[in-house]
Amino acid sequence: MIVIQNVGSSSPVKYRRKCVKRLQWGVLLVLMVLIYGSHAPLITLTKVNGQVPFDPSSCVVIIELIKLLISLATLVLTGGISALHSSPPVVLVAPYAIPAILYALNNNLVVVMQDYMDPSSYQVLSNLKIASTALLYSFCLGKRLRRGQWLALGLLMGAGVCHSYSSLDLGDPDRDEVEQGPKLHITAWGLFLVLVYCCVSGLAAIYTERVLKSQKLPLSLQNLYLYMFGVAINGLSSFSAVTSEKSFLEGYSGAVWAIIAGQAANGLLMSVVLKHGSGITRLFVISCSMLVNALLSWAILGLQLTPFFLLPVSMIGLAAYLYYR
Image (cartoon, rainbow, N blue to C red; front, side, top):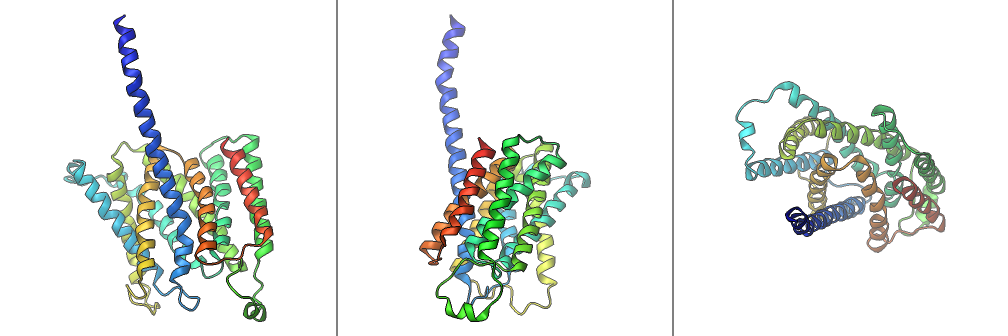
């Protein structure tokens, strides 16, 4: 009788904890979708005469520095500062250099790609990272996928091909002068950069998830190691670029600082997903952010969406359903 009463009394507590946990995950994922989807439109808003006015490498350095400082503050507030009293072994810290290098490459690619495509083209084609990540999960980590999931990957690849074919910019200057308002477009160089970006993104996510889950350390301490390398690598890259004509903070506006704040928050939230969730959750966030991007591009930038654009969008929606069901 006593056992039954204890179980009954604890059930509401467990139910409330489960609801709170679900609510926390829901808020986290919605926030990530909003931040991720608004990234490309915000970069477009910063452009002056079609060019990004700030140095992308300096922007990445500031983002990494903010994440480092927040991780250090979190470690102190949670009482984990004792872990820094002694020097950690090199074997423990060294693995965090690899994702830092990969993320540094991708952070710069995101900004560079905006010069070769419109925001919605970037957002749609960046969903190809779902395919690249799943393929790397299958081959590198031995994760087996169902037939429906492989079909979903094929749909994603088909969506990328359809969108690229319909919006491929062949570089006709006369046509560009006639067209009014922003239109879907992507150059051949932009398509190549997207493919590189998707492969590097998948590899970085897989490796980071494996490192975070394999080490029994507080997430704030792991983030501290990760962003220490991030600041160092991106800092060297930024200050060694003697060919840059822009000063470190030149061209910074309110939109640029909004990009920095959003990307810093998104990086920290993504580490929570990879530590306590999975890379599949990350892919779900990427897919959903496409809707936010399209709405912002239409409402803020006045992007003209052609009817053919609905085909790859529908294919990606169907692929997401098949993959995550």
